[in-house]
Amino acid sequence: FVKFFNILRSVWLIVGAFLYIFVYGAIVLLVGLILGKERGKRFVLKQVEIFGRLAFKLLGVKVYVCGKKLDVNTNYIVVSNHQSILDIPLIIGYVGPTPFIAKKELEKFPMVNVYLKYLGSELIDRGNVRQTATAIREVMRKLKEGYHFVIFPEGTRSPDGEVLPFKPRSLEIAFKAKVPILPVAIWGNHLVIPKHKLIVRGNKTGIMFGELVHPENFQSEEELRQYVESVIRQGTKRLKEVIEN
Ligand code: DD9
Image 1 (spheres, rainbow, N blue to C red):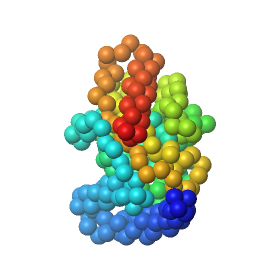
Image 2 (spheres, helix red, strand yellow):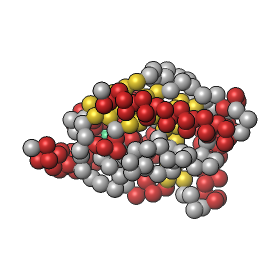
Image 3 (cartoon, protein in one colour):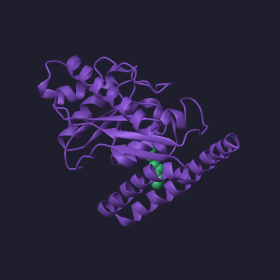
């Protein structure tokens, strides 16, 4: 019976995601345009946040939240481990509709790419040094304007959920810009929708917010990166215990 239920949920994932993201997503953008700049933006961002939370409800997945969510007026960079395509809805739903620093390949996903841009995300072409430098400059500029960003420093989704070593220099932007880091640990999304699969399996996931980390307290990007990586690794272990008990 569980298998049959999961097959139904997997079909629902594809149909539901299409209807929500493409059909409702287009309506939301249109209404946003009609409402005008300020009201329109508020409306669209609210809908994005609602989408993030509703995605889990619609898939029948319970989300455990540990730690305190930050006041959105604080300037920070969210650093999170990466397990599944569900990490994006989890973050926009539970941290807020935040721009991402992500790989350029995400541009290939229709409508998702429109929303990523709408949020102010910067997509980085890792093979293109000039484009990367321009994107990083743009991130720095937006940070000064008070934007938040999300970074997945493992650079890819972990197939078994275990935190992969953070890529060298992945926290350089935070280190150089001296912007506080909000460590976010995710555990469970890889069991719900595993990497490279479009099936739905588990029914529990979790997100944990750590304490803000201040880059100026570290001598180098490497020291900062290792510290944040260990905080997030511990966070995933703690979440695993919470979810399993
Ligand atoms: C109201 C539909 C929102 C679809 C959001 C996709 C978000 C990707 C960042």
